[in-house]
Image (cartoon, rainbow, N blue to C red; front, side):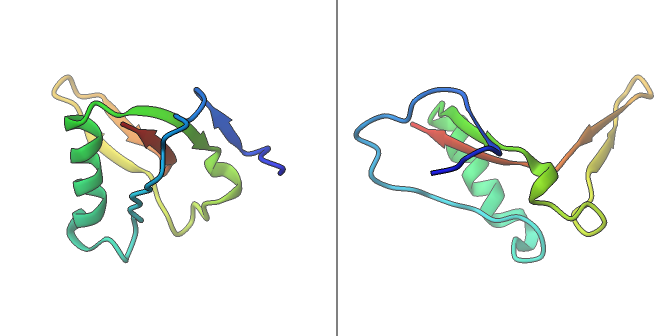
Length: 87
């Protein structure tokens, strides 16, 4: 299996049998799916297993980064990403 665009942080647990997925973009109205999954990752203290390099998989003219202003006047840019977590 070729996985050139996947960067693994650690080996997945052997007993991992279930996957919960959330997709962002137009299908994620009100960020319900991604927000719920983000909540699970945080509350269950999930560890990141891997991430996918977004360069090959996102059309950045359609899926734009989010920019937020900081109180000090600076800006934070969050690029679209695909990550895998386990708990």
